[in-house]
Image (cartoon, rainbow, N blue to C red; front, side, top):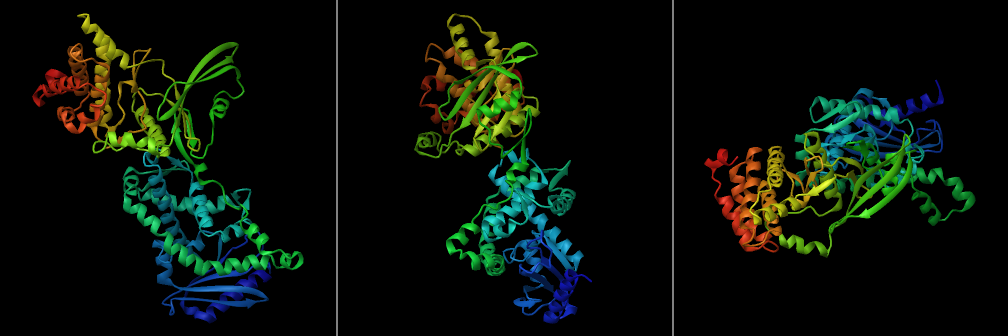
Length: 575
């Protein structure tokens, strides 16, 4: 028998004498330094003993074995299992199974408990992602490594002394023996897939819509946050002593020989031993493939990714507007197979609105519409909605790349003009006693597109005519989705389009044009499957007062009167 095996046997014997061997459910040795053999005499041995019907329910004591310090924690089986499945003791004992351990007794029992724990922690990690990215969560594809590093990192940040020990487990920022550690996570993900809470396929995780929606309830966020309180208390009580003892033990010789003072020791403990960035393993789809949430790419980096080794003849970046965001047009010329090819892209940088500049906008729509303010939320809405619509056959600019750290979205540039030009041409044609059939057709198509979007439970939020592009291919494109939402106010989309359209029309002179434009939009909306009652609700002062700031009252009144002419019984005749 090797020294290591004898040491393990003695630990089992000591535990048996302490609590009674007949009552022991499981014993595990926490692998503090897995790269070192267990016989290494520098480290403190930490042992968890799970005991059936144990009184007292918690007991810890320190002993020595062959000159080594051994810390034994004995815990009642019921309390241990409650800590596993609900964090009863702030995971002070359950979290031991997050880190590598060696089973000395009751291996199958420990494996079952580890699986229960990791299933719960995986679901909590998905809940936190869902709260942080409520729109993107439905599209995210997550590698198992995310859960491994997210769970580890949360505990390292929460209890920094663990970071000191983690230095022995890391190679760079990657966990040594990562594949072995991932096995239990994959087992847990397979079970969650069978329970239909997630889908685990081709080593990627996607969440179910039902679970994602439940995760976004405020009570879930409150529950997850409040878990930190007992976690702090119990982890400090049951974790600080063994961890501190390990650090002191490991550095005794250094302290003796070099007289390292407390400041130097503190600096050593604070060294950056953190693990790999978890968000690196969370991906969102774009038309060009999956992009990691951790990718930090600026404009020049994007150009490099797009063209690689191809020879760039010219790059021109031009600001093309944006009051609440920065929008740039990138024009590139490349040599491809001996020919010069020009390509154009749009870049949208999402500014933070959480300052005094946002106050007038909030007051403007108070009681009617709540706007997403944070840059992260708006970026997520833009990407998620664009991909949602693209996959359902809508004409939208393709998202080419996303850099959430830089708050940048790179998208396809659509050649064409926005719908405000069509509105102006309709008004001009009416003044000349003419009809602008093509422009009215484009407005009608816009109404149809809105109805089709609404049929999926999606609302766009910002439906100004400028956010509709009539392309050179005569297709109608929708864009600007940073205020889009599921199950939002459909009437708001209609009201924004119609009343904002009135901004381009003149009172008295353009009354007939106003009626023509309004009816064209309504025809399209009803043809697309929209409901008359949704349109008619837009005449409410709740909506009209918002637009009275920049649309003349007589134009608003004309739009209202035109809408009121549409009855439920008129749907087929109007359409």
